[in-house]
Length: 453
Image (cartoon, rainbow, N blue to C red; front, top):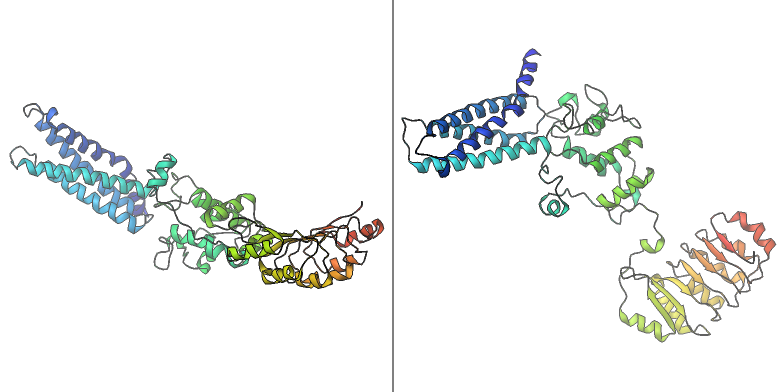
């Protein structure tokens, strides 16, 4: 234990010593420039600068090796920094040897060595910055136009068009983050702190310090505490590489608040506005309640269909450039058999239908009942009765039904009960009395009934 403490004590000198070789190497290189040399009077100073650069780089590398023994660094990121650091020590030594007074080498040797040392100095420093601050440390606080051009953006798996019950929160959102940030130090071969995060069982078991995650308790969830510490804290995780970003910490925090469940789909989690925004922006998960018209996916119709609709006396429009569902209205006084046939042919594409004042018959309504994506139906000013509407119970997505100025009576309420998707029904100027509306209103808590009232 004492040996380990001493290793850590001396290893912590690495960040202090590492600045000395940087300063002396740069100073030596600057004084070797022609306009700083004055008949060789500063040659001894250059030799001394290179000697100090070599010695300080050697001890800095030694302290860095001791620091690496704490096991907090990922080998794939640590190794390049170590090797380039060793090379810098070697070529710093060469730089000093080349300037020993009694030894003469061609000036080309010193120039090549100077170039190698300068390149190594930049690489060692950059790799060290990656270890301590993450790979994006140079661009993290840069202006957006620089960040988007040079910073490597993390690409998250997207779940566009998937239902919420097919996206499993831990497996597809949380676990990939743990695999990326934590698994290098907590796996089957290396289980630092006694924690193996390569399996759910290992995560649930926890490590020597306690549980990795405790549902609904952030203070007892040690992994969360470690990833949200200041990077200056010795217990901060991950100790090297790219730390958890703000929204990644936000996601883990929400998952813990929700109980840290390892098996449930997203549909069983409660979603805050912040999490809804995060899921949409980072994963393409649109968790808002979508109207049916946004869920339907159909291929665009050819122009010949629109010409046929116009010839049959329909006006039309698509809901948007990306949504081919149709809003159509019959413009004549009487619905023709040709028009009804078109409705049946293109039934999946019709979502809003206006047939007001065109003498709609019971047989026409049986065809309308085949429009499976119909969400709005206007039948006002037609001689239809309540019993004619029986076939409409197949319209499982119908939300608005306009029956004003028709012949329907209070029997219509029994039929409306068979269409639970209804949100709004117009019944004014019909045979439905005010008393009947009041009597039946309680049976339609999700439906707004608009009548003479």
